[in-house]
Amino acid sequence: MNYYQLRTRVLWHIAFWLAFVLYYVLIIGSFEGESYGEVFIYRLLDLPVKILATYFVLYFLIPEFFFKKRIILFSSLFFLSMFVAGALQKLYHFYFYNPFLRPDLPNELSFQPFEVLKLVLGIYPIVGLAAFIKVGKNWLEKDRASQRLEKEKIQAELNFLKSQIHPHFLFNTLNNLYALTLRKSDKASEVVLKLSHLLNYLLYEGNKQQVALEKELEIITTYITLEKLRYGERLDVSFTVKGSAKAKEVSPMLLLPFVENSFKHGASQQLDQVWVRIEVLIQEKSLVVKVVNSKSAAPSAQAAGDVPKGIGLKNVQRRLDLLFGNNYTLKIQEEESSFQVNMEIPIILVSAKPNASYHEAKLLHR
Image (cartoon, rainbow, N blue to C red; front, side, top):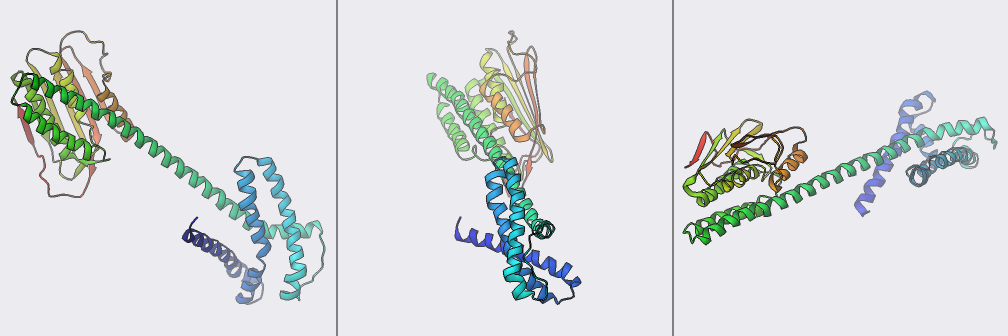
């Protein structure tokens, strides 16, 4: 504990005891027929045993027995400390408090049970209050630590899932580039340029918690361009965005895996003309995405409605669970000749920025 933390703690403890004394001065002092100043001095100088009993419970009994769930031993020592504190208070009053401060009061050294119990009842309400604060503070700290650990665990899992998506996505893109270089296509250089754009996004944006929705849509456009270069004229793809993306943010790499999946399990497995339809609807507080692609009519082992077992979509579904809980929808529908994904997720509104926005934009690649 550094100096400033220690000083703050000491000040809080001083404030606690002053508040306790002032309570008696303001509430009880007016009934004792003495000035408030006199009551303040009397109550202040009557604190030593109360402070001793309080800190004995706070810093020994509670940490060593109560927090360690040794409840029987804690209770026994607690009740024993009550009577010890009562006896010490009696000795303090007899040898110091009454002779020097209250000579008008009768002063007799007697340990009759009723008198000791009366002194205990004067000490232990404040001990109980301090103990309640101590236990409550400990519970709150544990609860906050538990929540922090849970958040860190979720964030670590999210980062792990995104780290899996990135190599998976890059692997597919490099395969595209490899296919073009085998054909010695002039489009290979364009693919390298687009790939550098994707890498820049993955390295500098993909690890953020939120990114501008415009950037996520731009990266989808870049990916579609790469796929168009790969498949050429036999690919019919449309990308439609409705609504304004300005001043809106989403978690990165949530949309792209669905688009990637539509090419991987659609165009790459078909030899004839193939098609992909991507529709994005930007609403005030949510984002609706629909991705439909043609597929081979050959029987599939994937049951209708299940999320495919590829790394990309499995990870996205897990990320959606971690990010939104039940506050999202994801529907997968597989037909004989088509595969469809429908997703709706919340989006974050941020302050308006002077960036260009998508508004009723329709990007067609034919």
